[in-house]
Picture 1: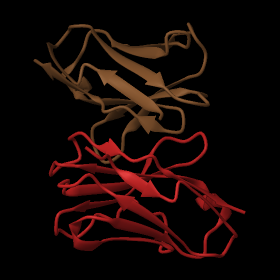
Picture 2: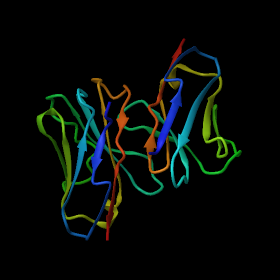
Picture 3: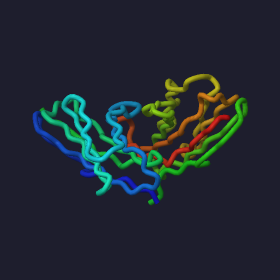
Picture 4: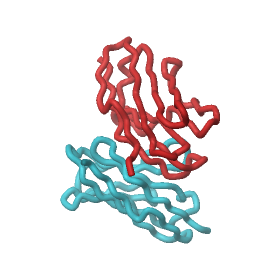
Length: 106
Length: 115
């Protein structure tokens, strides 16, 4: 059975801190791992990772995939209150993890 | 406990036919969402049910799409006169919360292919 597990489930930090969110997966027919930010109706797409060891970066967010150890991390540096959201990862046939609820306190 | 389940897992249909996709949310979850993900696209919101309130249908792409939720539990998404651009993975999610910002638990999805 395909499985995606995220940790931590919840994280509260202060503005300016750096956070690392984890996603581990066990899926058949792996093709890519997706990260989403969920604030409103639909999660918004952040990154798609297909190759090991290649960091993808967008502003203060970055993500990397380790296909040998079957995990990915999402880093957010210099966090802002607007980063507060649930961060989802999905792998395989769109199997979603349970999400990490990130709260940034001013 | 049991998670969100969807059926069928795969559906292949011919253009012009109607299809019904089913979602069984987690027991006790009052909110139910339908999304779709087309190849290479992000998740697209379709419709949202919350308790006995009127559903938020703002994401439905055309009047060929409709959804209902019977007894506050099982939901069916119906696509009439399917078109090839309807091909996508249709995902259902449920949550306990009364807003969009609480954790949504996703089902395995239904992969719809319209020939």
